[in-house]
Image (cartoon, rainbow, N blue to C red):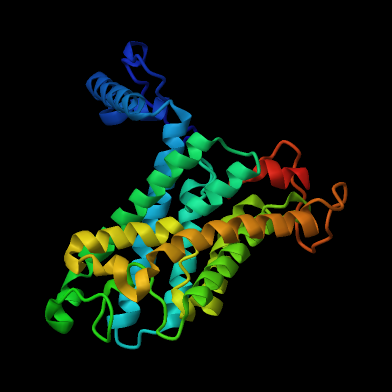
Length: 336
């Protein structure tokens, strides 16, 4: 018995292929016709990819912000609906789902735009000198649109549940209100000042913790950063969610609020609770800026040449830019 392996039949039309194709791929149907067909298909794929590929960086980044915020609201709003209608639904599972959704949303957009997913974070990045005002405006539009579409898909995905509840009435407040499954509304006991303070604190925690996990001195592997961002979201949800729904993000609240207006809930989505709608818009801007500067003043500007000793962490190579989680990377690199 011979130990020699049989020779593979060469592709007879390899020289005819206009693209770089491996010999294994060229053995498609072991014929010149098969190879030519494969070459044509591959060429069409490359042509389509080149046609769809966007070269303008700011447009790519805006699209990343759109899809990231869309995914966050799709998962988050769906979690709220499940919490309300599913047997055994509870707030803890919803809070965890918001964290999971935020983590994967950051994974989606981080390597393209920095995964702000939040107009307040974008404005803070501008104030710190890391992005232009034009990007802030474009990102904000993309984030609000992404949140709007995310809420719309969550609504359609659970339309039967919503129609089966309270005879399908689109009520904003009260025991049968469902608008709060999409946008945020305060608990009945919350005052205007208390609600505003709630949003400032929650967003300050978010902003400061994002700078914390992207501080190179902590030597956190870049692939872990989105997962930690998700934990931050769940932490805030579990500690401040009962007050006003932990919006901590103007787009997260305004996009779904606009959708509920379009979905038949009426203008009460803006007038309810003494026109509460402005609080989850203004509060997060104040909180994000405050949280970033608190971290900068207490931690970021100190010990610039020292690495923090954290067991299990791996040092970043100087050439590794890591994930641009908040696009505040220039600021966080100052502390590297």
